[in-house]
Image (cartoon, rainbow, N blue to C red; front, side, top):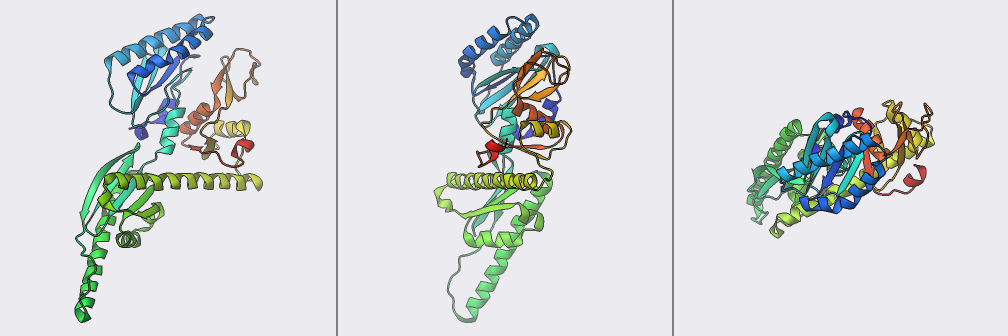
Length: 355
């Protein structure tokens, strides 16, 4: 599960120069589609015997691993470094574009995007008959618990019998909701999740919501009526729609918070240079960057300084022995090292212009 991958641990690993090869594949056959990319990198490195050796030996490690392994998930990411005798693979439950990247450390940007986009959440699918509680991690749902309801539908009896019936029915519904909340409370203590969604019958959802304790109520991010006769697909389609809507709303709120801080001269900064400076000294809580952002960066081989922009000379030591890097990946690494978060967001008005 990609949500369990420790990005901080990966960000701490570094080799000499371009000693790491990072590979993202949907299947074994897709490796062949990267031949053009491999030939291009080989041509670019031909004037540097050391980096060429690293690259060719890394390709051998990749091909050996592919020959020895199969996977049934939507994809895999593989990090190899011949110089460090390092090989690490992770299954991916969400497909990502095929990618081969050569750098001095593992290329974690796609993993950081997956972890941001598919955060853990919980779904309660409940009606008066029964409820199922699902823990969704790495875009996959596992049923964690089932609570029996057996609350009968409201029927007309008349007179005192009607009042007694309604009172008993309400009491049973309250007890049923409390059982569900007890399960959620236990889950909240064992598993990390930030959002809770309710789907099912309106009456049951209202009762569950009223029974939530403050920590769970703070995580409730949406609810919607669902007819369970349509099958589980309807449950999960609705749950993921609610989740992605909540994610987009959170992105917009984060950007609004950043704008407010910048406008009043607060703690937020915008633009590659200022964000990099803040991240380098651990003064970042969250970084917002558009998913398709292509921000160039430059690292110096002599002093290892990282700068934003495509440079031909190091800003610190003046060395011309520099090489280009993906600045977004470098920022994701710095965020992981300092326990900050990188939010990959849909295009937002003003974000691209400001940064």
